[in-house]
Image 1 (cartoon, rainbow, N blue to C red):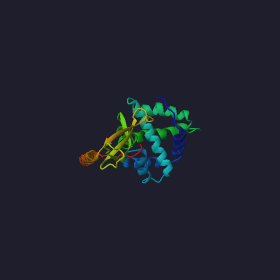
Image 2: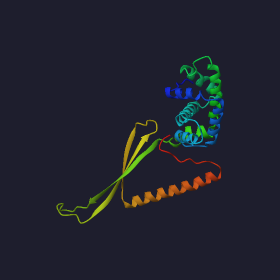
Image 3: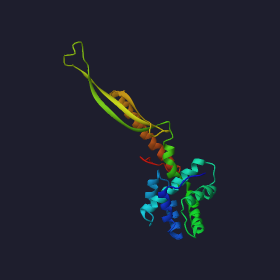
Image 4: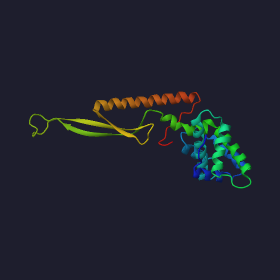
Length: 231
């Protein structure tokens, strides 16, 4: 598996290697206690709040870890240590992460850290995959708005003032294609007040069902994450 280390990730890794072994261990301890989070930002925020390291460095290393996890997970068959020893080691050498005579020592430290951190499936793995799992559908909801109009009822003589009218709602729903994020489409649905009431009842029912399922999952020891706008 061949991949390239982004320049910014390379800089974060080099700064991280300046830390002591004790700081490596402390970071792993904090990371392990962070628990499952919906995305990289949430995980970085949780770790930063418990760590003495600079927030920027903490966030950068979390981004490196979740990126590596996604890369490995996309293959699905490569063992973690094989992925580290072949794919990651090769990419880091190309990025010139370890200049100088202590390259072997630095790689040994980083290798141990990567294996330990990427083994935290419920922490790093969850932050890396939750958004992907959430959006695995043919069409993804983006946004919606409702346009409301008055539609007068005219009779034979259209110059006469209408004596009655109807309220019409137009539901505009924007969706994107899961395979092509740039392919966005708007759908329009005409609604009346009865339709609005039915939709509201359906949405309220869906929220009630979600709360019931959250309680059941919590009782069984499964952490149910709250979706965020980004992942």
